[in-house]
Length: 193
Image (cartoon, rainbow, N blue to C red):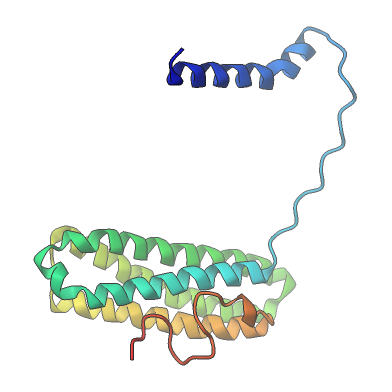
């Protein structure tokens, strides 16, 4: 039997085993009493969202720095930027998603944090808009002054989001959750000395 056929047989067997209780019930077989449902898992703590956001924000800052440092080689082959631009968009979006989840939690549990969360989210939304423009420009091979200005703008919004996220982490007493960059420095990974 080939590898593909054995995997197919294993999947079919698993499918049949998964349906066995339903078939037994349809046939009138006696089943053990149902177990009580497991307790719903707790929602992640705010520190989880802050830590996850800091990882992806740090990654977005690093990606924007790499894009800025590689501008000359990319001018000769703009497609080199496309993957980096996609990663930048995705890292920013993941951070936006974390802030959205944190805001949903904070509305009831920590309303005084909501304005700080929204400040981070606003900077991220602006950075995401710039990142979308960067992605479009790389696809069209349009690198130049406008591209550089847009990249600088995205980086500035990411730096502002980083500073706001640091303040938010302090509000939650979650400074140790800021794993994407050192919050004791004035800059993030994208700031090269």
